[in-house]
Image (cartoon, rainbow, N blue to C red; front, top):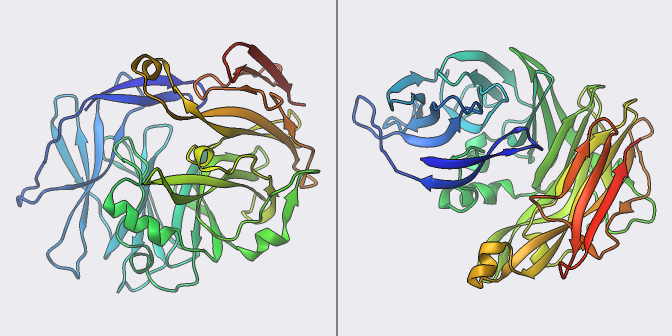
Length: 419
């Protein structure tokens, strides 16, 4: 695959912009069986052209389970195979890449295993060498991992579980939505099956913290506790307590104190112009203490709930004060517009629905677990584009927003300084 990548100042890494050339190859193992590709990973270092692929081969003996492999392709397309050693029959449930290029994986035991709650965490470098391995007791036998974050050398996972005591493969099937440059999202049959299982209402929320070769904690918060600790902003309406449904995490931050802020939106599938699409709905924000226990859920009502706006995800971000006592929660609300999404669309006369953004900012008082009044910038008349929404000044701890009116006749500047 030949791809074009651009530098993203927000994430401080190169992001895939588009694929220029894509050629499919089918490597085989020594016994002649094809590998099934699960996830691909490229180095964040532009000077490295290596590619690592997480794969498996299906076993003819159902009792032994499938075999997983780590394939390393160098810039000469030479392949090295590294078997992933698993004790017993396991299923890959999550994989992602750390900032240092290392690849992490979570495996769950399958039905029939001696202990279906004994999960396995593995960390490999890009060349296929094992760096860390942890077997740990999962808070639930079928724990759905929904997000990963990396802060200060620690890896955090968030997940959820239903009331079932069965194994992961019984509850969610054989496929997990694995983030990687080679993953296409929910547009394939296997993932749609997994999505159906993952969209069921859950009973518990889980947090896992791993540092190096050690499990720091694995916690369980009953879903009913979120409603009991629900906090809303003054004069805001429409906020809802988390009820256990699947949600998309946009921002996952470990504070200097060790506490966590997790913000996102509930997600579902809707029919849009006769096509099934992912929808981003109610806003959620969780505040966890440094031991992984829930301190509060912060609720903010969503402004636009029409389908043309829900098909786009909100951007969210936290700005911390210098004393660490407050965090400003920035939400880019969506207004779906019918028109030309870019210059090429206008040139070719192709009209579509596209997203315009306007910022809403709410200060979180981290010590008292309370919210201040929401500030809405743009007065409902001026909007931002996703590729140029803001400019952050780290010295002043402020953000300048550059936008325009709906008719593109007036330039708008807004500035927010965080105390």
